[in-house]
Each structure stands twice: as C-alpha cells, then as structure tokens.
Length: 236
Length: 258
Image (cartoon, rainbow over all chains, first blue to last red; front, side):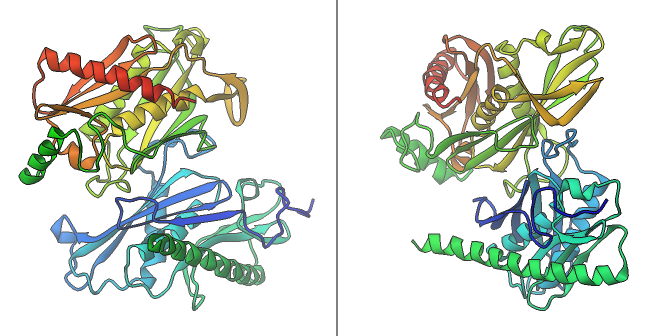
C-alpha cells in the first residue's frame, strides 16, 4: 500500500488550520495561544522576576524556565494524571532549549523568566504548538528577542514526505513513519529543536527539513500578525 | 493587604459602589458560559467572569465500585491552580486552597443528588463509571469558586459517554448516552468585608474579605451545600443574610445554564 492521499485530504505540504492570538491571559506579563487543528496550546510568561531558591541564581544573566503541561482532559484517550510525567519533563527541557537562542537575558542577572505552556486539547504536534505560543508570549512580554521561534512537525508516511502530521499519521502501523518535530529561528533558518521518532533516509531528511523551513515562514507570518493585532486593538 | 486600600473599599460600600463601579451584589461583566470547548473531553465548559477564566473538563473512566457501594458509580473533582493563571501560583501538587475549591465544587454536585450514581453502575460489584471532573484556571482574577462550580455542572450536563464494549472504553467514539441530571445546583459565594456583603470579588477585593460563605442551591430554593471560609466569624444573622443573597443571585446564574 502506498500513501496516496492524506486521510484528511490536506496537501502533503499543507498544515492543519492555524489560529493564533496574543494577550489572552491578563495576569501574565505576556501570553498567547496557538491552535493547529485540534491541538491547542496556551503560553504565559512571568518575568523577569526574582528567582528562588537563591542558589539557582546566575549573577551574569537571567535564566529561562519552561514548563509544559497537558491538562488532565486534553488527551483523546485516557485522562492525563496531573503532576507531570517523564515525557512532560523532557518536553519542558527541549522547549527551553528551543527558545533560549533568541533571548538575551544578560540584562536580567539573578532573575528568571518563567514560561508556562498549558494544553487544554491535543492531537499531535503539541510540543511544536507550545513552542509557537511561547515564542509569541515572550515577544508580548516585551523581552529583547533576536527572532521568533516557529515550530512544526515534519516527516514521512510510507514514501510520502509531509508536514504537520496528525494523530492518525503519527501512529500509522502498516508502513514506515517518521515524525520529526522541528523548531527554527525564522530569519536565519537555524534549527533550535530537532527530534525524531521513526525511520527516514538521509536524503529524505534533507528534503523534509526544507519543507519545514517553508512552513515555518508561514507560521512566522501568522505569529507576527497576531502580535500586531494585539497592539492594534490596544491603540483603539 | 494594604490598609489604605481596604479602608477605601469599605468607604465605597457606604455609597453602594465598588472599585470598578459595580453595586455590592453585582457580578462582573462580561459573564459568559461556553460549553463543549474541549473535544478531547467527554464534557467541558468554560466560564469567564470579568477577567477570571476557568475551563472544566470531564473524563469518563471505568473502575471497580467501592466495596460499600457495589451498585454505584462515582464522581471525582480535582482543581489545578495553574501557574500560568496567576503569578503567585507555583508548580507542584495542589495546595490547600485548590483542594478546598475542588471539595466545595464536589459537594455542591454530590449533595444536590442531581446524579443517580446507581445509573453509573455497569455491572454490580465489578464495573462502574467514574466521572473525573478537572478544574483548570486560565486566569485568576478572583471568585474561582463560582466560576468553577458553574463550569463543572455545565460540563456534566452536556457530557456524552464514550463507547464501552468488551470491558474497554473506546474514547474515540462518543455515544448518544448523556448524563441525566435530576436538578442543577448553582453555587454563589457571598463575601463579607467589614459590615457589608458582596458577591464576585475580584482579586483585589478578595484580599480584603473577612469571611465568605458559598451557598449551593436548587431551583426550588432549597440549599444543598454550604462552606464558610475566611479568617473571621459570622453571626447567624450574617449567615441568613448571606444565604438570602446566595439564593437571589443563584436565580440569576441559573438563567445562564445551557
């Protein structure tokens, strides 16, 4: 069997429907949500603020701390037990590493910038959606940034290369599948997150990263538009 | 709490107004209730009161019934004070305040007897539905109690059971089977600051609250759960006044139910 047509009729280089909004959590210093298909991520930024316990403080620069969490009812399967798992810890870590390169925290010694990513609803691509939301929230918080970070999953199902795998594609069992979440800085195409589950050839990896680059440019435009929209409504 | 601010809040009450211009027993606007906001949950609702924003989701699980109630299913309520919703909330297991909130919401529903727990039994002594209700705060600007209680009962009222076959739940397939609610409990939290009673304090006012009483009531005017909170005592006259306000405002909130 070959994968001729995507199950939801999307083109192979087409993402699910994206919706983004900035300034959605009034208590936060910066906030945003990013929806892609059925995956929905909120991000809130608090800080720079005092860091406790004190031994974590770095007198040369501020630190970034990210936390990724799925709400208990956010999975289409069983309830997710609150309190975090090994999976959510790892995603928190790679999210942090994905965002750090665009930030300049030297201005904030001994402080912390907290990023909380919360997912009310998920269906594949949740770490990428979280990174997209977090990147917008950091910009909304007014932090000095070199760039926005855009993230999407790319990969293959059978002999087809594609972007933004949905749950059914990710879990296809009869044919080889590769799921590659990737995050990029949009201006210089540098990669800040790269993971892969599955099987893929070197040649295909190269091709599919190029597809990811293109999609990240589109996501960048959506993020930029959402950021501008907030300040437009505030000006009114 | 800043002393001057507290005095100012109390002075405003003298002319029947509040920091944001509201009357003492007036809820904030916009006050909205949306149902089925999360499609991965079996039931869900989102309540926004002013800047307070809460999402509640219900997941259905199948478990062995409790040995002392072999022919009944059950409900379970949890609350997560997410650190994304308030700079003072921290990561970690639920604190005392989150646990109190979850238990007050739980009692409001349980004690109203709106759910026939026997109907949640699948096979006596072996299998029964457990409805796990999770409260997640998106933005906390005071009065999480009323927002969470309203969202929780709305999520239950509109939930659909997943398919259950061969002792397995197929979460991907929702059935037409709904949860029958025999009545709808509505919770109103009335707060006392100095000698005045208010509803729906924002987070600034909440710091000035001396005592609060959560009043859960039914459409027929009966009470189904109460919870007193806050550091100061109440007289029985206070309690009766607060119950009256709770019942009166409960009628208003009831109109929002979908």
